[in-house]
Length: 567
Image (cartoon, rainbow, N blue to C red):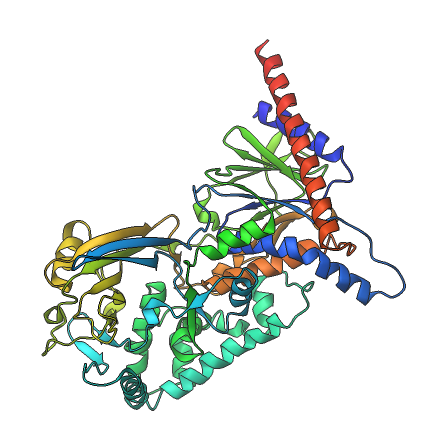
């Protein structure tokens, strides 16, 4: 620890020696939150400068170069929980290659930050494979199919779509309109956040949701909202369709989750249209990072964040290895998955390192739900007999309602790719996506695989999301998520936590909202002077060069200190 203190003091000394250096921002995590943050910081210096100049006519804005951003991730590839893979399978002698999503799969047309980022990066949007034209679904309660959409192969797709829309309205005529109204209202409330100036921000997730009149949904269980605003007498929608939707999206009981999570879970079904990225959803974080110009360090876990209370600067370490010194550090991944040791140099003795004292308490530790994503090649499709179907035709997706609080393993089966192009029937050859608790490769899971699908089915790819998990366990959470800024430093710098947003809900757009808000907080302390894109880029490169020079000097000084210790 003494050696760590010496290295940190050398880093701080050299960092402070260059007063003309750009603000340095270290980001831990390269998923949607971290990558979007890097992109927002890169592109916001000009907008914040113009906002500053337009808001003050009496004085010209001070000139400040844009931040220099470094992004660190323990994984060998960027993207976090957004992960795309290409699967190639031979069917009847013909090779088929399909891009599929192991993690975050879909976005909603009203997700304006994700949609705008895709447009800015030149990414092509498409209808998700899960929402292919003519797709049908059934609801399964672990014993019987309690709801089935029309799957006749004799009807044209557009007729089938109209019939199925009419069927779902007729089945839940007394409750679905009210739930749809609530969902659409919540989704449209975000427009107020999107319309806010790029430099405005909110100190906490709760204050952000309060600004658009949605904070009351953080503490109200979804079942209570349903009873108060949808129906106090009929629970059929809540225990069937709503239960299956929430299980598919969050793998947890739809009645016990907070109302905000429940409403967000229903947005894909009840509001707008859905899209994914043609080249894979992980193109979003990868392209955003590339466009930001941030320095990216993969396979580099950050294990220690060391703060100097005297200089208000931070140093990052991976084990005993010094990584870099920064004015601002942003944790852009779930704290539960990182295991970071937060330390501070003693205010009384610079040679002493002690536990960091935060300005605000850390957000409560969240437990996460493990979910396994499996892709299956089924040359003969789903086995209708597994679901007790009385005929050979079954929907292209089966959503489990999981009564009694959960399913033992599988809870969603859906066709992603039909070799015939017909997405109406699941009992046809295709590639299927399965969500489960333990997977389909071994033990009871492999037995379930052979039961759900007809002969010849095999697993193409399986990924277990368990570090920390696919999404937080929201049962019992009430939106008490702490603040985005955990520790204040000079000139707007400090320690931030974008993933505080995930305490309230989990989706790509929610991560993007957290990133946008924290970017505004950081830029509020470092507004630029509007020098033009090329000038800003040249200044950024000069700042990056100074940073590299400082870090090289730190390494040389550290080596000298170690040599002196050995002597």
